[in-house]
Image 1 (spheres, rainbow, N blue to C red):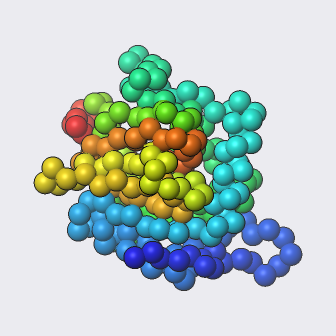
Image 2 (image 1 turned 120 degrees about the vertical axis):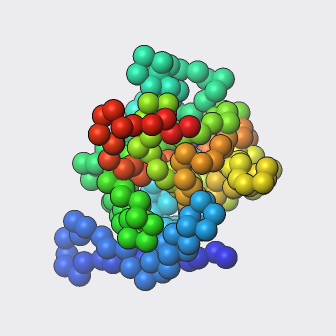
Length: 235
Ligand code: OGA
Ligand code: MN
């Protein structure tokens, strides 16, 4: 079911731009549906989770970052093992800057933070922060099958990807292929306003090559690391 987010962002009534925006109304319904999916299956998909204008502004933001050469080829691995590997992963990324004054980015982060708080309340996840980046996959680029966790760091609990691509058609490719239970896979087209959330340590997934540039805001909700010496590998 497509959940519409007509007026989910509460605006302050004074003349100045609001400093904080509360997620209200149908946003709360979508968050509740996402939480139910995560609780029941470990993964969930929301559609039209932000207004069209916000999604268009986010597209603009990625385009201007790219024009300013602010997107950098993504790397795989961590620490000394971290390196570029275009055959594994072909996107260009820019980590979000919390101090950005961009209003659309603030609206997306408000929605994601509401999801974080709701997860903590309903699923006892203890999520303390969100880390995210814009990702641009040029035509033909992909991300090979992987899991969103590192051997030495299991603090990523939930992955959340918000797609920004207007008028995406199935023949454009670029689906997120999520390998779920029972040997099944779900293909999620990266249509603007679709938000997919899943347990980071549980599901393999991959990004299929697309015929068009493919934009997303990709991120992870993290919990606090366990005290040193008590960690355990996530995958
Ligand atoms: C990732 C990832 C999925 C997507 O960045 O780790 O799996 O659909 N992205 O962009
Ligand atoms: Mn991933």
